[in-house]
Length: 374
Image 1 (cartoon, rainbow, N blue to C red):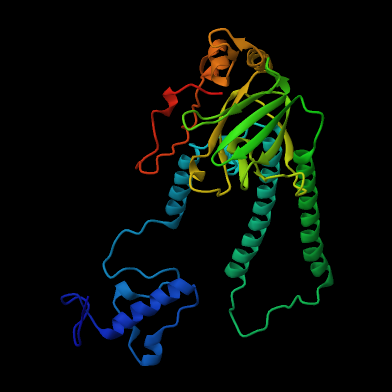
Image 2 (image 1 turned 90 degrees about the vertical axis):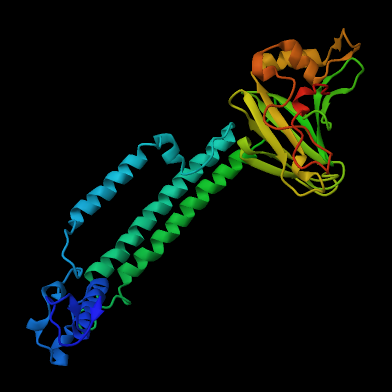
């Protein structure tokens, strides 16, 4: 853009400062969508001298060079079409989950339902508030110095916007409390397991099952083998948490539940018991979710959920002596003996064994080949 004096618009494309000033005010008027202030009237500029490219328009200013302008309706339609195309890649189930991950317990589904309805309520309030804001901005802009109608003494309106939020909070509190009670509810368990954490691994004991030597069936993780917590599906499982040293945390992401493990929980009045019901077979990674020392990041385990009949077969083997070793079956040996496909893999499939090598630049990858589990 070239500025000069004494040149018209058609001679070489030279634009005078007065003409550029007019274009600038047109852009300002476009942004604020106000009735356009025409500076040439106050400056004594002949409006007819302003070239066609700088004529005032209420909606928007056009560029210095002529060009085809895409109608707004076409732009909006294109944007809506793009959103529809992108939305086709989302399944209805995922849309209604609003980002909530898939769980494998009945408690996880209860929490998902609470989350879904909470988001729907929040979106409803958001749409109402956003709509009122846009409506006010679009149709109640200041157009004169006249004082608009005041509502500060409108008693019915004040009662409405006080009662509605109160009712919403009460409803949300009710469903949150009922969901929490459902998650914390305790009944007679079908299977109980003692979860014992220590730096930096896990031990799982089944007090309802004993080996031929009279000890409770247990599984202990090592640096060569990730401990497997074998559990039945469609059964009420009770977890009793404790720690041998520092505070750890029992966390299975697919359970959507985490609880810290403390030393001597009975002496510290800690709630160290919870229950759940796993609704499908599979392998689910478990972790320590409380910073507990040098090897905290490697303190993993795996939940192996089996159908009730497979679980009973597994526990039958765990309470017997392995003829080939003369010792009670270990977890890995019992799963190998069952030979039920991937679910009976004697090694973890969701994580790798604890690696004590602090000099290594990457976690050990060959631990899966070791199958000496307890």
